[in-house]
Every structure is written in structure tokens, then in C-alpha cells.
Length: 295
Image (cartoon, rainbow, N blue to C red; front, top):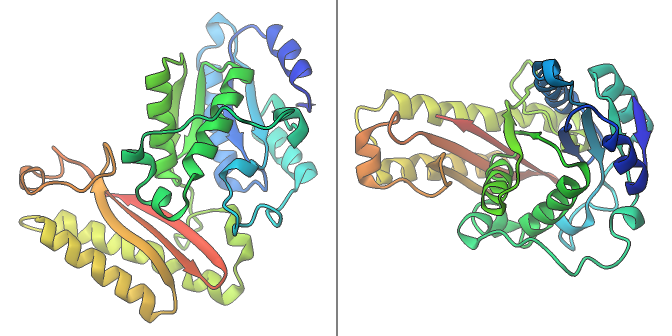
């Protein structure tokens, strides 16, 4: 694997590649969930080998623009040497790891602002400006890497949808591929922020997947779904989290297509017609965790 720190070297290296890359952007501090995305990207690269194999490119950049003033930008773990070893072992060909001055050589006055109906709900309601920061850095990385495909994890379900819609509306020739959420054997969604949890908190964090699975089972087993029934399940899950010492931001059942609440008519038509997803965000101690489960 080749590690590159400058835009000039990245462009020179990719210009000599036989095919456009498959790209996996990350903020580093990698875990098995990231490596699963890399292996998925390797599979996409190998599938096109007949016309010239695409290099698999990963980026590591802790993007200041997507952190709020009271969030953990400064304490976000930087583990570049370890991350590089993991990427190489997973089959990554190129690691692009610029510093802040390289990626933002001047103040980033131009930004990509996603539409409020998607970016200001759920995560966006609790982290104002987050998806503007995400879209801006991802669009910039897309311009630098020029991938034919990019892989994003479904654990960040709303982020995946925001990026997919950005690519479609901007007319970018990039296939956005979703990677399934990787979990511990007990069911905890793998996340870089899990490293902040104590042993007791890590055990308690399994409450999230338990609640998600309960709502999934209830929805699939219900004879009839209504907005009132979904609201009852959401409120019960929020109450359960509070009882156990969490500070929940939301538990919401939404349409997979646009993350808005399903109508009564859509629910009456059934899950096959209107597939749903439950999304949750809650703080346990000092650590804010998110998860989701399709229904």
C-alpha cells in the first residue's frame, strides 16, 4: 500500500492507474467496520478487473467542519500508523492522509449545503451544520480522488442518504454503495466512539440494539401499523433509555426512502410497499452513540 499526504502526489499516482478508483473515506481510528468497507471496495475493484483493475483508495482526515463547538474534534483519536497497517492488511492500495493545511489551504468559504428537509432532521436537528461539513469534505475528496464508486457504512444511515442524494443532484458519476453495519458478537454496532466507553458502559450500550430489535419485531408482527402505534413504541423506547440512565436525543421510525414519518395510508399498505427504519441517538455517560435497524 502506498501512503500519500499531498494532493499533487495523489493526482499523479491516480493519473497512472488503469481505471478510476473505488473510494472509502474515513476519519481514521479504524475498526472492523471500516475494514469491512475496504474489503467490499476490493470486491468492487476486482469485479471490473477485465477492463483494468480499479485501485482501492482510502482517506483518513479528521474533518473539523463537521464537529460542533462542544464536540470531540480535539480528542478524536489519531492513530495513523496503526490505521495504515490495518488498511494494508484489508487490501487497500492507496491511503490518502492529508493534514488540514493540505486539504484546506485557505479558509473553506465555499460549502455544500444539503436541503433542510433531509439535513436538518434527526442528526441534523441535534448537530447543526454537521451535514454541511460532511458534504463539503466528501465533495472535495470526490473531486480529488475522482472515484467511480465509493463505499459508506449503513451505520451512519442518514449520512449515507445525504451523500447519495448529493451525488445524484450534482450529477457526479459515482456509484454510492452502502455497507452493512458491523456488530460485535453481542450486537453492539462498531464505532470509533465505543473506545470512550467503560466496561460497564459497553455492556449497557447493548440496550440500543435490544430496543431496535424489539421495535423491528413488533412492526413485523403487528396486524396493522398506524402512526399512533409507532409513536407509542418510540416513546416507550425513549422512556426505557431514560430509566437506565441514558440521555436520549431520539428514537424514531421513519421511511427508508427519505427518513420522514410514514403516513397512515403508507402504513396501511404494508412494509413491502413502504420499508421502514428505526434510528436512535442517545448519550451514555460522556459518549453519544447512534444506531439503526431496518424493519
